[in-house]
Length: 310
Ligand code: A3D
Image (cartoon, protein in one colour):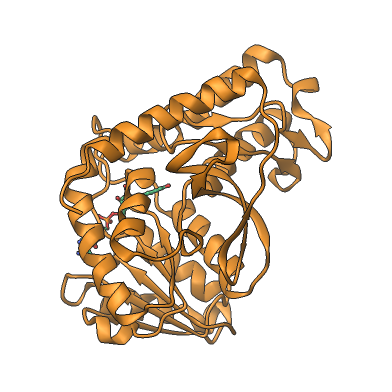
């Protein structure tokens, strides 16, 4: 067992993350914290009671007190409002900036060495908020979106081909929003390029469905947004960090010249290990991919420019 993991926000995503953290034994100690009295305590107890059935022995505590989060090695921030039908991720910006700011200040005070994984939307702006407020080095602040978006992309490709999603390798880069960039050129199944197996128009449909992956679920749920896979995606990142796995995962990382982009967080392939974002894996993009990625950069810059009070 490896270290202490705090999950901030005991809502839908935070609870899913807590459940997966226990089930996958990613940490010795898991703390679930929220501002609502009784909520994290109840959710933690519910998660813990699955241990005799599933057969794991990790420890979880629900709390409203940041003292209990003290000396966490890794912190997942899910606190904030989620989308309702008709809302964009940008609509959440103003309220969630203030929530992420408060949470980050508390985390810095109690866990100055932690690595932060930000999940709250709009993610590319919220991870920037946590970075600025914390004053942590860029390696210790990372956003979750690419793991989820790539999982959706891989799932849709697997469905189309009637193959195991396990054998689909695919990467989504850029913003977590309509301008995200699912790279068709690099998608493969068992090493075979997907472009050779799926007709172009069908592949375009899959790309569009991936870009609207969150919206499709918001529309179906009618209240709240996706939570099971977002929670698992955050835990895949936390596990890579806590167990120093050096996993290569698409994450929102702070770019300083990589891919010709400077001064924003954006989804790129990174190596995640005990030091957080240990490396960004840069590779040549085609002119079309560069243009598409620039749309992401412009959209993230617009979000960041509208952040006030941090
Ligand atoms: P929800 O179920 O509403 O849970 C949010 C929780 O945050 C609630 O329990 C609140 O009480 C709590 N909270 C609010 N303010 C604070 C605070 N200051 N300190 C501690 N806790 C607080 O939402 P959710 O779990 O469905 O979603 C959480 C966030 O994740 C939202 O912003 C979503 O948009 C976002 N989200 C992001 C992704 C990505 O892929 C990036 C996916 C799914 C959800």
